[in-house]
Length: 365
Image 1 (cartoon, rainbow, N blue to C red):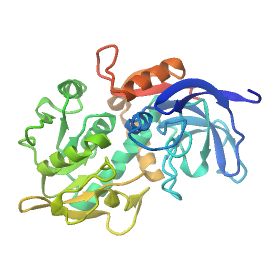
Image 2 (cartoon, rainbow, N blue to C red):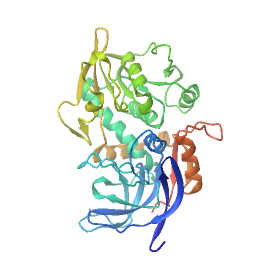
Image 3 (cartoon, rainbow, N blue to C red):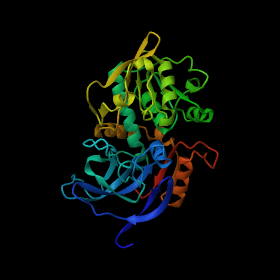
Image 4 (tube, one colour):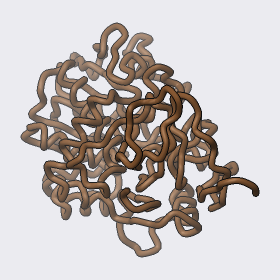
């Protein structure tokens, strides 16, 4: 292979391998970035196992890196400066880092300037992979407050890394009670031991009926897409009259909304809020139960302002967030093997809880 190359995790169908790939030249308006650390997201795993149809051969959109070179007409970023990434291109919302074009599971990446955000100098570099998912929690909170007011009671349906970040952020944003609803007793026990929720607020999702004793001002639906329909039923059962359900997870394509919603398309509501810009109303009123209404909202992507706010939150209390990172693996065959096991739903080899996995690629600048 002639010319410069770098190491990457390359997807072929549902397979993932460690390989050297050509390092492309930086073009006009682009930034060549050395990647430092990158997270493994649930959507990455869904792409890898074929649940999602995205086309990128190199996945990964949560991370931190530093600038190596800026192309002609690119942003005024100095070589060596740290940056994070806003995956959805605000100018072209269906252009998504690590989904429609190659992402961050590689030593070097060409990134369009529109998705590069300068890193907060106080941000601990090891928390860089949490900036984007926490930014979605900042955005979701903003939309939920607009729909139903600042919440005192919050429920999070789904205990994956995103759900746990929403729970931590809800508490930091002033919620008096945060309930975590999840089908795994071991994950709930882990969340209690980590201090994310109290024992009385770790609620087992039970297929036999909705949780009792939960009446939330705002419910964040943070399930994988495959579980979003069942999760939505739970969310509607626990939201108070006049409250808000934030569809952090989109429903699978073709999935039906509740008949009482009279043609409201949940995914269309999410698409109204893109990267901080709202088209039409940011939320829609629906029937949540007999004699009960709620507003639903959601979003795609984040604005740079949400990532900047997320970096400030991470820098203010790094210990609260570091506990989420349970596994760090170097880029290479070990990372390919671990992520492959995750995409197939295989449990951790060590028998513990696998919460947030981070791939360590380069030193921080």
